[in-house]
Picture 1: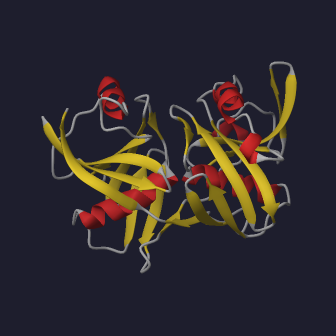
Picture 2: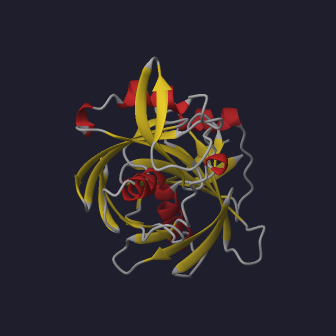
Length: 276
């Protein structure tokens, strides 16, 4: 089965994007893993699937697969690429696109400067809904790993995130500690791990170890979760520039009861065809 696709990225977080509206597509774990291989396949952090909606108030259904073949709930950088993809493929002529995700919905707005704003919805802070094993909601939790205790924040942006404060993000043990936290028993669905250095009340640096993918150049939901965690700790203002390895995102959150807004670029690299 020959399938058309686009290779895209959001600040270096790269995607294979497939239109499953105009063509028939069947995916399984092995197929996704084969396509994700950077030596013998297309190579990507995540695969994005554009499907017809199942709800009448939505324009599309948005599905995300990690490089290890696991399906996940949300991806902020992917959402921006999703919006650019459906416009470039003429699947939609709208500037505001509503998509359904595994755990809700998102509003994607294409801006005149080719940036895309994503309304990520309200962050989830209740431990049972993240999910995270804790007796009650808190801004800071203590997590024990190999005999050492770390202070972390736990947030869901449609997918679970654990955020740690570090003094120097460049020296943070992202690969080693990220892998241990990703599969910590208190996160029953695994977790994305953010390492945040606060530069000022409006500027942070961030590296993210994503579950099922390892460290990526950028993570949109991770940037949102980091700003939420920083605001809950009283460290950040309402609007924050998040500097990731691949570039900068603008994140805005007024506080509890309000949605998180993320603005950033989406870039098409090339279009291709592949046999599934």
